[in-house]
Length: 141
Image (cartoon, rainbow, N blue to C red; front, side, top):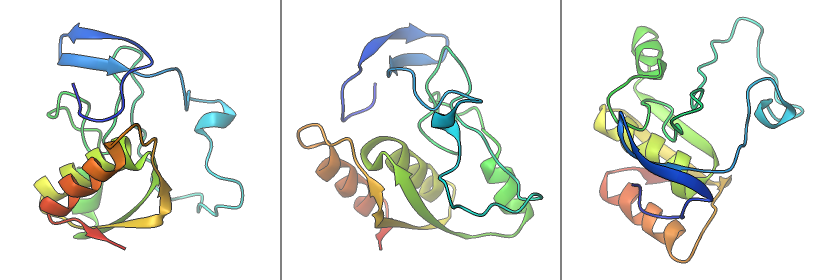
């Protein structure tokens, strides 16, 4: 299980290990999974989707929650020669943190723009996430 905010439903052992499941959110092909209004995404821009399994939540943009099954972002970034990543998003203390830590583990230079993020922040979870990211070498922008 991940440190930080607790589950809203379910969880337990799965084929990929211990799993915490959150309430349904960002469901494919619904407004909750859409890009923010006003965000300009070129039609030929690659899009990597995470958390597409009904059985396993996907916190990181790099790996499923087993920490081994790739989502496809690493291969895309390496193919394009990208070595530095700037992250924004929700939730700082869960998905952003997991993505930043995986990116560092894979050797990327990582900056998380605090003003572009929002945490869930159960007692202490946001501070704990920033501590973990800082220890891993993630810059706070």
